[in-house]
Image 1 (tube, rainbow, N blue to C red):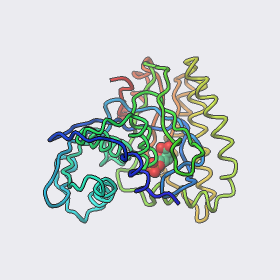
Image 2 (cartoon, rainbow, N blue to C red; image 1 turned 135 degrees about the vertical axis):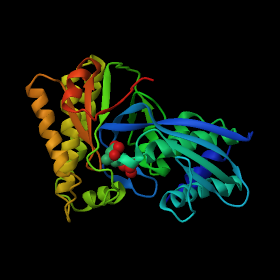
Image 3 (cartoon, rainbow, N blue to C red; image 1 turned 180 degrees about the vertical axis):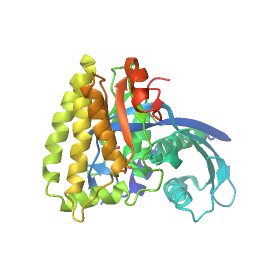
Length: 330
Ligand code: PMV
């Protein structure tokens, strides 16, 4: 079995290093329009299916990185973290993969522009920004595709956070994941927007890692998921090429609801939605009935994300005054 360490060793085997004193990198958060749900390899975060996302422009993570002397120093949103906090442990554990080769400790100073405290996952942009900063600090000159593989080892969806716009993560076939890489789509859609709504700012009860594993192992509906994804990715690409918003929104919404259906059918069932999440689904349906083109997507948590176009922002804000709108193209 290939380990994370094997992958890092392999990628860094032939690079020459020209380190500098400090590095800074930004990576956007991303929201999947066709979700990644289910791993074929839990060590390497290799997915069962491909997925397709939209990045969130200026909402994401900025990582400032330099070398430290005797231990890693982790600062999150301006606050130094104790080494035994879950965030610091996850970061140091990830850095251990590189330490075997570099022999260095690091000072990571991460600021999230995506509201982490409001319940939005920042691990994707966090790992992507950290990999970009490591690449810069050591002067490895790794291409984006290699950075995508390294980010995937931290968190699956992080491999899509290396680019703005639409990004497809190819599931790949290689057991070592050399072909499980994300890639940006050429098409741009400047009027397309994602908006975030906060239903619950607390920590989610079950991690996406555990939830997807339980779904794969116990949900009788999961066997329908790979075929659904293949159809949806095809339709989403068609919608993107034609700027067909109704098709894009219909497919993205159906994909998210189907993902939640697979987990509701798991044993024990996984239900991330709260009553306000369901209320938002109904509000979105009501908006459409009133002629406002808007669709909803949700990840492994209760907080809805809305999909719409710039010309509909004023009407939407009347229905959702707290909507935080991400710039798709900063
Ligand atoms: O990358 P992870 O392990 O946090 O999983 C992400 C899972 C979803 O957000 C639900 C779907 C996705 O494709 O981002």
